[in-house]
Structures are given as structure tokens and as C-alpha cells.
Length: 268
Image (cartoon, rainbow, N blue to C red):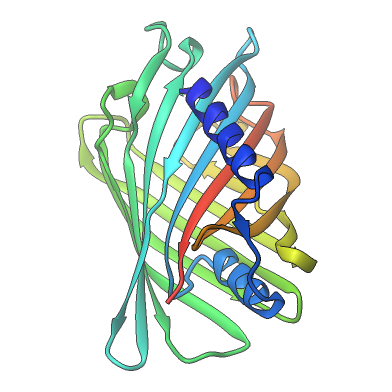
């Protein structure tokens, strides 16, 4: 999986280097960048987000999570949009996290969220809606074996070159054969857009497992990255790379996370 991902990124770089990239206008790039950075934009997109986590357990093992995250919005009357976001994780889990069953590869639990958001433009954009976790893991060590549900909220503003906001969710288990689940997630995002489609970004994902011991509850990363909006042929793309250090993590949790994301954009 890791080799295929590296090969895909290398091929993308070769395509750009050989002139496959086309250059949209400056204003179009700026508008598209802000849409791409807005988690509840009224735009179809397909982010492929690869998270490579290192320093796990006493043997400094690694974990890879490729999140396939299709986003599909639709109108609900004249005044509201519904933005659906689905996260399908493809996981390679180290032995320290599988209870001695060796490294396990497969699909994890699917996370689905639907944000109800006003369609009218305003200085502050917001969306709220249900969040549901489905026990779809191909192996029980890759998921919770629980049906879980809760609520999600996103709030953001986009003054000038900035896109600033936060996304929150909290889900609790409703039934299933696994251990109880109560998981809180907070992801703040700060983006500053530069000329020619480049931007600086920080969007760490903080989590709290309320069912864990107090010493193992929080995962808090700090870091940042860089991204670029460009086109290959007529296809707009958003490529970004980040590095995060977990300043707080549970026992056997990762020390570092390296994130590489390629997002296919389908603006109206």
C-alpha cells in the first residue's frame, strides 16, 4: 500500500514537471482554493488523505491510514444546502495495536456526516448535522464493532487571504458487540493563501476518547503544512503535505503524523 502511494505521488510530480499543468486565472485560483479549504463548500470533491503515523509502541512501529473522503452537496429548497461527507479508512495496523495478532490490513469503520448549512453567503459560514459511525471494519481490530451516532458542527470565516475555522464532532455507541465508544474530535484549520495557488496550512485533528483512562484520553498534535491548487488538463486538484508532532498521546500512540492529501475538485 505504501509503495503504491509513493509511486502515485511520484507519477503526479512527473506529470506536472512535463507541462501537464494548465494555469487558470489568479482570481479563479483564489476562489477555488477557498472552496477547497472549506469543509462545507457547495462543491463535489474527492479527497484522498494518507496519514502515516510513526513511533507507535515500544518498538517505534508505524501505522498507515488512507482516508477516502467523498464530499457530495445538494440543495434542500432555496435556502439550505446539505453537505454529505463520508470517510472510508483503509488501514495498516501494527501488532502493538492488534493484541498480538500481527500486522493487520483492511478497511475500518465508515464515518458519515451530513451538514445542514445556509446557502446564502455571509461573513461566518456554519453547518450542523448528524454524525454516524458504521461498524464496517473488515477485521475487528480495525474498528469498534459498534454502531455510533452523535452530532457535528463546523464554523468558519474567510477574510481576505485567510480561511479560518473549526470542526467538532462527538459520537457515542448505540449498540454492537464491542466495547463502549464515546469519541470527541476537534479539528481547527488555518489557511493563508499565497500567489499562484500556493497556501500555508495547519489543520491538526485532536481527539478525546472519553472511555479511556484519564492518562490515555487525549491525542493533541501540533504542526503545519503547505499546499497548492493546480490543474492537470481540465481537472482541478489540491495537493498538500503536513507534519504533526503529538505533544499529548495515549499509551502506544504515535509520536508523529505525516499527512499527504490529493483532492479532486469538481466546481460548478
